[in-house]
Image (cartoon, rainbow, N blue to C red):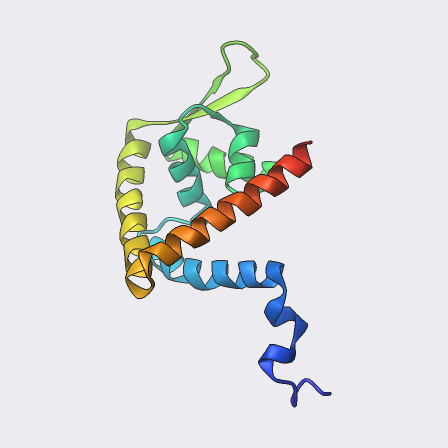
Length: 154
């Protein structure tokens, strides 16, 4: 059977979980990333600010992992964010080799606006789908991530 005559449902990729996750992320994120561009904020910067909003004082490696960036890329992004006075770097109190990243007042003000935009975006997504469906999807994704993180660390 050729690609032209195959139904979409006959294609392996259309039922392949990693593809479905990536495609769903792309579709749902594209709208929000457009809003971020309108606010002149990159998606990686948004992730850093959002991560720090609930875990101020995170390590560079912890931020890189939660923001899905390679550590060298994270370091360059943090250099720019320090320059823009959004975050500060400070050595860890117990291990001076570890660097902790914290929001500045300017960073807190920026993330406040961005979190509101994210909440509005999510509310609009849920308006298109039932909130129960959204809760089930979130729970399934958290479970999937948690199981894979545990396997990777274990």
